[in-house]
Length: 146
Picture 1 (tube, rainbow, N blue to C red):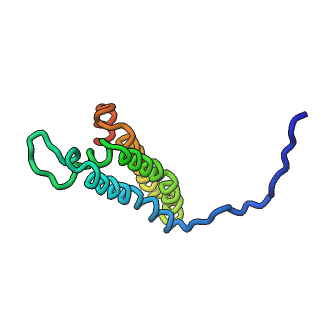
Picture 2: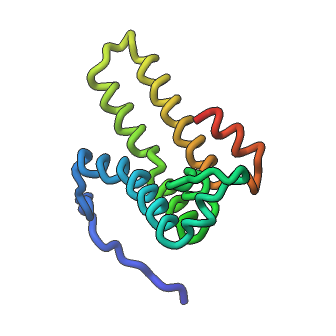
Picture 3: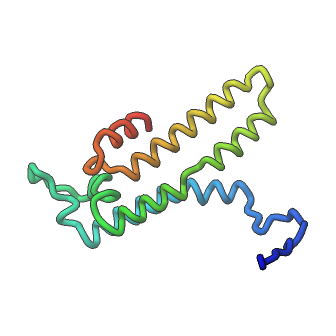
């Protein structure tokens, strides 16, 4: 006999309500705070390796690539933050807002801006997930687009 399932409720009330302003601030600040974490972690645990150069020039901070892509757990933290930061929901909300406030004859600009925002998001995602040492071509193209 197959199990039967009961409908839990017919209400369409959301489970969690988050104001868009707070949601946007949290989403936008994720890369900043994860980057700061990565740099600080490199300075504490990998200072010599992350600031070393082939020409023996003294560096006091690691490069961005070294801070977010060369060592663990920084690489994982950065990739997780960028995956969460992936703002397709924010792009959709902006498009809905543009539809409400922009004249109908200028709607192509709103759609074009949303398209560019989406392309930028995908480029940042690919740039973060594929490092230059793993797949140089994907990294190079993603960096150019971003």
